Length: 380
Ligand SMILES: [Fe+2]
Image 1 (cartoon, rainbow, N blue to C red):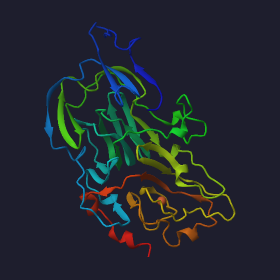
Image 2 (image 1 turned 120 degrees about the vertical axis):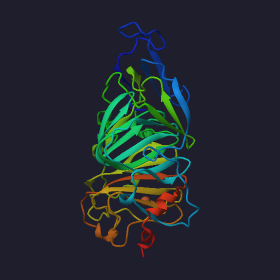
Image 3 (image 1 turned 90 degrees about the vertical axis):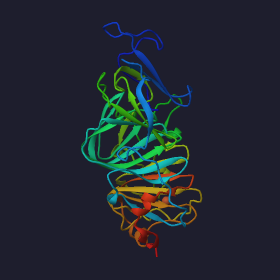
Image 4 (image 1 turned 60 degrees about the horizontal axis):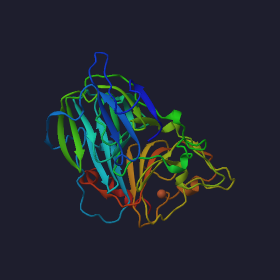
């Protein structure tokens, strides 16, 4: 997904005999995407990874993941969901065939249950807190302002050191970097908004105990596994599929003579989805530039913004952890006064994550409970 890495011990050739120091045979796990056709990693386990003591249906676990419950069809409205009022655990708020968006809040905890999402890659954004993401690839410390990608099917758990809060996007078609950021051999180009060095990989730990149970989500249903050996019993791995963290403030924004379209903030992509990072930056340099976004009718995009901090140029009255949804079908643009007030400004301190979707999103029943309903009328 990014670049090739190798950690711990791996044999010279895949699919050959590989033993530990005591002569015990180790077990390969080929972790592949899109069949056997695209990116993969190979992990070497002390025990066979496919053997369970028990495996059976489960209801899910609100601390880890529950299925989204869609609200009845809604009239076309601009929506604002207040993340500050979200309950503990994982709360789905928006869903389509391409993505499920959930708020997450976790107290400090060391859980004995892991999670594996068979429905998509999980792209987390950490609003606040500190945790260690434990995976078969190693341990990855994460914190405020980090995007954290957990590839589909990776068993993992967060050891939460300081209360963790943020948002998670389940990318059902699979995460990728926008293709225009790469050169023909896959390296990030020099004009990409980040470099390979900005992405943090897990620190390799070697074999260690893992969670005794793994909750697996597939098709929005759940099973619980009790694996015979630790899912973290890995002596080495190599490949291009691995969890990573990317700090949003490492994003390198671009500024133009006049206002550039939101695609200039492109960060990550998935089929039907584009993620953008709005970071503090110098704004347009033309003496008559209007730095605030122009009103626009994007006829085939729903636009979601997760507000992190700072004074967002185009909106008034939205605070940190609020999520706005501007649906396709009606024009949208700055709040009254914002457009005019931006003239002559030369910088912005806004920090936000935006997601454009090409298939319409539905709200969940949980989102309706957190909605700030006057938002729709706030352009009058
Ligand atoms: Fe927009």
